[in-house]
Image (cartoon, rainbow, N blue to C red; front, top):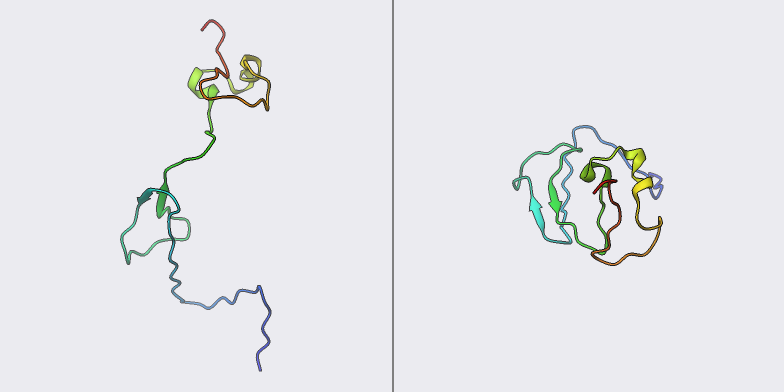
Length: 92
């Protein structure tokens, strides 16, 4: 009789794995039904939505990354409202 160990994964050679994935927000599927994909292949992208956005002020303002902190107009960790100016390049 085989012993079952919860949480273990049995690996069997030459096995095809099928998974169904659902996007929780609007997005775009990048592969066709039945298409073979690799484990690292992007198969879909969702639109970002939510109460935050990731910004790159160094890239946007042409600053060196180490100069961003010197150009901040609000303290790090401060709660800000939409439209608040966060960083400004010197001379702008």
